Picture: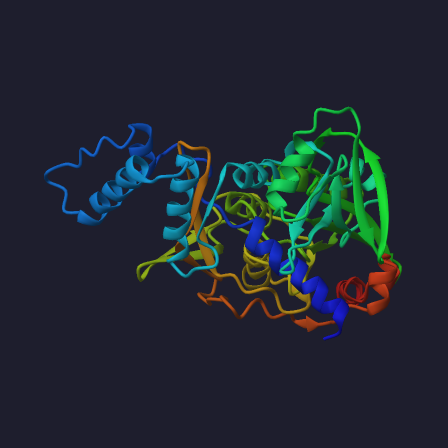
Length: 404
């Protein structure tokens, strides 16, 4: 793998760690955990006499002792945040984590499908650089010419050195100016762009009609499974039906996941009633999630995946492959076979922790293995320099498969 591929992999894998858009069963549940409750009630230390959890009492006692006796200044919020973060880190699970208020805001913006900003997703590399990870269609960031891999150096003249991606995001979102100036480094050159904050609706689904072998093929791309993705996907399907299209390619390359409900609803548009969409396993007990609707489709389908298709993308690909009979083209997917639950804390932060495994319709667990494509195709290096459909080796193979 060359340096360019390594850089892309670092960018994308870092994204999973920092903003990992994951399968979500329950989002924004207004439930405080015991620690949150204790903070709200100023740690009055009143632990039930019937409680056998001595460890919790020890934690509260320690907190009160530090707050009362430490000689320096103490930020109580940071103290609690650090304690919760340490608890989640001890689980030794890359998908279980504590997100503070700022990261939670970014996380929800992405999954709700609407927010105020410049229309760019940012991430942080292992060397500390905060970069532009992607820009959204017709956003201020895209119109200003920002590109994936641009290293952010300054926001409104203020250096971002030593700041994480969440802090840089806040610097941009909280700017009170009509125009924001951002300095980035690209190819060792500094570039300054000026742009405005805007209400950004995330169009997570795009579609078009391609021609191949004298046949018309619907081409649908899904960038994330957000709250508004299903409606956009249904609109795309209806548009293609009006054009009498009977073959479609569904592209979930570089799609790191999202709402589980969105995937379920999308698959229910296609599968026949009682077909298995996926399975869940919790403490050895398995539950089959089946199509409960009468609606189904007769499209010929090919699904495009790559090594960065993860989580909900893999559920969709597996369901199409095993329950619909679609072909999969591309590279082996990321391999994330677990389900996370989220809980919103009174402090505005969020807990995310693994609660279940998900299995393919046939009961396979793809964690660290991924979905294996029927046609393995590596991307053409020229595509990264000139990302057109004609130079997209994987897309061209998908067209070949679906029109032969």
